Amino acid sequence: LHGQSGDRRWRRRLPGRATFGWSQSLLTLARNAFPHSADRGTPDHPPPVPYGQSVQFVSEHELLDRFGSLPTAEPRVVVSGNFATPKRLVDLFDTTVESYRLFILNAQEVLPNREGVVYETPFVGPAMRGHAALDYLPMRLSLVPQLFAIARPPDVVMLHTSLPRKGKVSLGIEVNILPAAIERAKSNGGLVVAQCNPKMPYTYGDGEIDIAEVDLAFECEAPLPVPTRRPS
Image 1 (cartoon, rainbow, N blue to C red):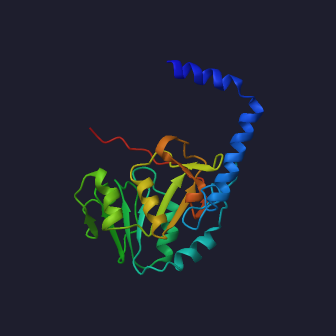
Image 2: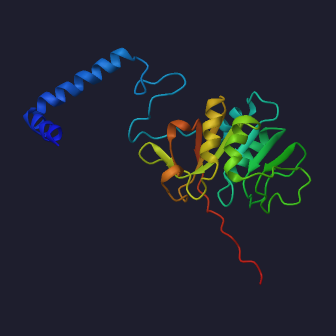
Image 3: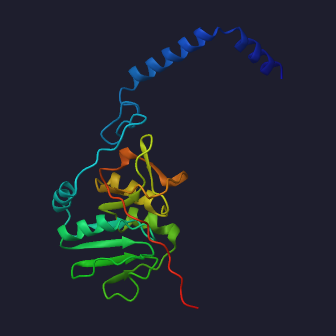
C-alpha cells in the first residue's frame, strides 16, 4: 500500500510534457533497434493499411487473368458457405480453371457441376448432398483449421464480404472456418479474393478482417439468399 501510494505521488510530480517526451524517445529507440517492426512491415507481415484507406478493386477481366495463372494444377478453393456463397466469384473461377476442389460448408446454392470439379466438405448441404463427386470429410467443425494446416491447405479463399469500412471488411453472415482458411492461405502464398456486396451486413468480432488480408476484390451487388420454408 505504501509503495502504491508512493507511486501515485511520483506520477503526480511528472509534468505531462515530460512524460510524453519520454514515450516518444522510447518509441524512437524501439524503431531504431528493430527496423523491421510491425509498423514498418516485413515481407511476411505487411504494414497495417492506413485508417480509412479503401481496398483496390479489380475488374472481372483482371480476375479471370489471375485465376488463369494459378500455379497449382488442381487448386483447393475454400468458399464462404451456407447462405453467403459468392456466386458470381465462383462462376468466374469455374469458367477459367479446368480442374479444382471446392470446399464449402453446408452449400445451399447451385454449384458448378461438371467433370473436373470435386466437392469437399465436413458439413454436407443441399447443393452437394448425394453428388457423385462429393469427397465427404467426417469430422468435427472445430478440427477444420487443423485439416487446413496439415492435410488439405487452401490455395484460394473466396469470400463474400461487406464493402470496406475504415480499412476493414466484414464476412457478414458467414464466418465459421474462414479466418483459419485465410490465415493458412496467406502463410502458404495462396490467393484471397473478396466479392464485396453492398447488401452484406457488417458484423464484428471474428467476422471483421483487415483489407490487407485480401489480395483481390471486386464489387458485385446481389441479394442474399434466404432459407425457404419446407412443406409441413
